[in-house]
Image (tube, rainbow, N blue to C red):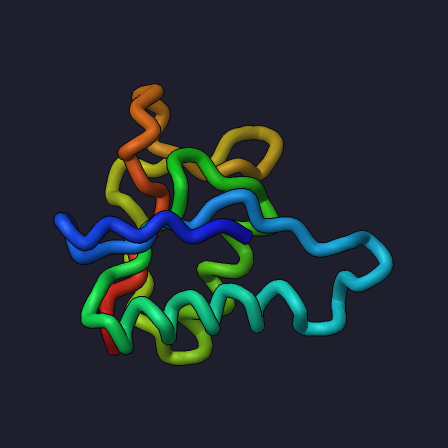
Length: 102
């Protein structure tokens, strides 16, 4: 997973996450997202997803919400037939999800 830090906007943009197929289902993915969300909060930053996110990434943001994180799905975000979630305007700055401090 990559996290692009922007001190100017006090935010971190998550992207490029991938868990090896034989390691799936063992909690590694959610642990990565939780760590990044916790680090953002420690800095007083917010965490943004990248533009459109995969079905698996969307599930991670939903799992963060179930764990008490303040996850907001972009009001214009839609889910396509493949389960990808995005705003659909083609702007990479249109984050599908934002995680605010608890």
